[in-house]
Amino acid sequence: DMFPAPAEKASCSDDAPLREILKTDLLTFPESAAMDPRELDDAVDRIIREYDPATATPVAQGMVRFDDNRIMAAFYNAEGLVKIPTAAELAPTGVFPQGWLEARRQELDEEVQAHKRKEPHSMGVLLAKIRVDLLTKGYVDVPKLYLDYWREK
Image (cartoon, rainbow, N blue to C red):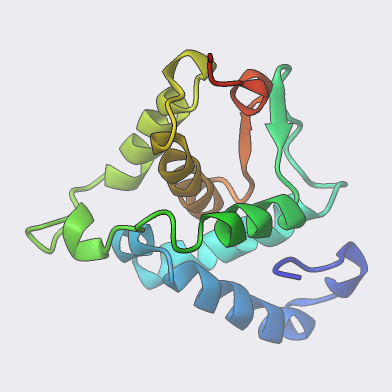
């Protein structure tokens, strides 16, 4: 599993291998290039905190929180179908402007509204939202209506 079992989080020293795995996973996200090492460590802390039901942020009404199986399934199902951009494609100048990641999170929150869902574009948007939410919030949530969307025939 990508995430720890709550009982596995006894202390920081016990978390060291898990933290390294999470950090390595997050570094595969092109958006992580917008973060400095401290921000990346903070992202790992948020993921660990959000995984524990006792410290997790409550999900807003109408939203669905993704568990690790759903996150992994999204990446697995999109493999070979969705091109994940490179950091150079996201920031052609090689520099991410201050606040870029938060602005991207807000943009993706808007994009995952049910009325904006369009196939096959939706899978790329969903994967981007998963990556950015994990980096910025430590968890992933999307509107239930977005997941319930069925393409009109």
